[in-house]
Image 1 (spheres, rainbow, N blue to C red):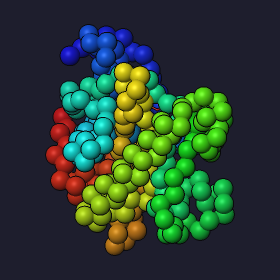
Image 2 (image 1 turned 30 degrees about the vertical axis):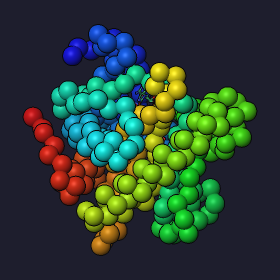
Image 3 (image 1 turned 30 degrees about the horizontal axis):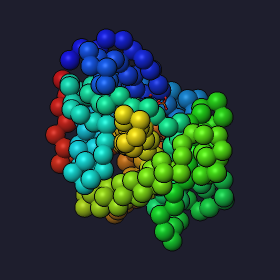
Image 4 (image 1 turned 180 degrees about the vertical axis):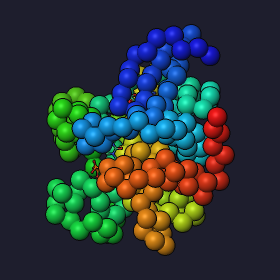
Length: 240
Ligand code: ADP
Ligand code: UDP
């Protein structure tokens, strides 16, 4: 399995074509960014833990009937995935208010919401990933109603499946972001990644933050915390 040509280099991952035009290699780099790329740092070993963490979570979701782009892990930092046509949209679910919703609505950090809250954001760093709704998505042609319904349904399902998985390991899934793409022009598939870079995880007992907020807030021990989460879930992360 060889990388042929880099087609995307995002803030944390790079995508490469392979000898199969339907497959890509996703390379998880150590690069870490926050605040729409304004804060950046390379955190040694983050790519390796995130690649293997992501594989574990996406395999778990597959076994719970959530279709994902993940095919297999190739090495510590690389995985083979299905090449998708991505929606320029981020799907977020919040169980507890934290982050941008607190700034936007003046909500108390840590408020337990009456029910999980779904939000769409436009994937556009220059605009600061603005909050959008179904009407924006339809009017601008970013996706159709069937796609919207399916993305919401799958994101709620991911929330149910992963909230339980993390809670069984003493962690609260506060919120998370996922992205979807289309396979063969019609099948909606979970794409990108699910790692502590894209969710908030708090220790049930102590409230300790175990996710990328450690980087955003300069709390330290970012990669170490990701490993602790992986250990609690029983993952076997392989390092050099
Ligand atoms: P960002 O784009 O936010 O800087 P990344 O560094 O994570 O983030 O870049 C990964 C890019 O790959 C994102 O633009 C994402 O939408 C895209 N992507 C993820 N999975 C797939 C896939 N299966 N097929 C095509 N593109 C994908
Ligand atoms: N998130 C993400 N990428 C983004 C924006 C948000 O992975 O570009 C995740 C973030 O880690 C959190 C959830 O989505 O788990 C909700 O993020 P929020 O809207 O609160 O924004 P933040 O304040 O984290 O930038």
